[in-house]
Image (cartoon, rainbow, N blue to C red; front, side, top):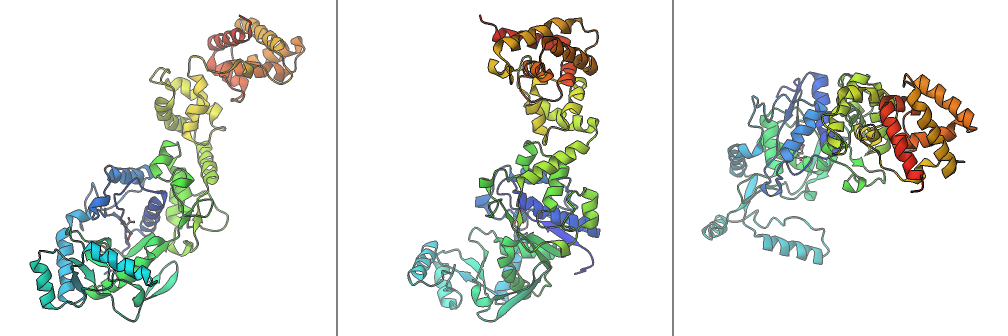
Length: 491
Ligand code: GLU
């Protein structure tokens, strides 16, 4: 194999929505391929028919597309070394498992699942460390085999792990790793349903797809000695290995659903930006130094290296993701932010809001909220009062600090009186007029502004009052002030 050419693969099993850890693996492979001018291949490992989940494949590919992780070979586009679905490569696996049978590296196993269960139970009772298999069929005579065959039992095929010695491989992140062969079981290569196991299909494909580097999560580390032995049995040169550190939740246990969203599609739905997600994931187990946090995709391609992948687990910090997302969001031009927010407004504003949402109107709101939101969906929740006919709130919200029902009513009525006469309803005019009004009423500015804010927005915190009122417009503000007065006035 030409080791000069970098060919890496992302090999997901379509068993559900891809977890952040899966896509982090894809990202590291993609970055390495792009950095080295190599190829990024997507291979679908769908040999476990029982674990296949409808829609999972689409979800995996959509996650990659959303992040802009384009592949050079794989589903939808094919390539020179296809097919890229393992379920379409069964002949290749059968041929190669036969090769191992012929060379004496594999054997047929006729043990029933009941026997295996019984065997494990007995091992546990004897307080032996439980192994998945006791090698019962490893040395069957031809006669014994023929007897099982005549009973119509379909065998599975197992790999003959050497009974002694050790297996060492080099990991580009962790260095040399040695396993005692006695720790390894005779793994299954071919199941009775005619499908190969992960181990067989994975290495046959890595070989024939000319994969140069296998970069995968470190949960696969214990498979690597078995794979190394398989490569030896076939007489093939193995690829280089790099196992990526685990991702932990804030409580330092393995990141899981318990910690909140873990599927990339969920983050997309929650209004995270692909740019921020990519940057954030790149730092889950990789760093340039101990301070740089913000990396564009171009920076990452330029700077990524396997040498800087960490050995220790990465911690998923939700606040950091939020912060990073907000930082990206604030760097956008108003126009760019509008184009990202618009689809969210369309789908997430209450049904009562007329569609399509006016882009012209939304464009006036964008500058007011840009500093105040961290995710795109917050645009719909934080700014909904701009769009609904009348915000919902309790009358008590109108009565601010050091105000009573009467003084609030007085303040609102005074505003109701003065606003119609304004010729221009812009920030400065509103500010000058309302400050003067507060003085006249003997109120502090805030004492007048807070009931007005509550009346116009239905909340106590909003973008600046005057720019908000200017965007809402005179008519809408007056209508909302009238509603507020009604809420306070005794019936
Ligand atoms: N199909 C395996 C997975 O789902 C691939 C592991 C590997 O990259 O070897 O993660």
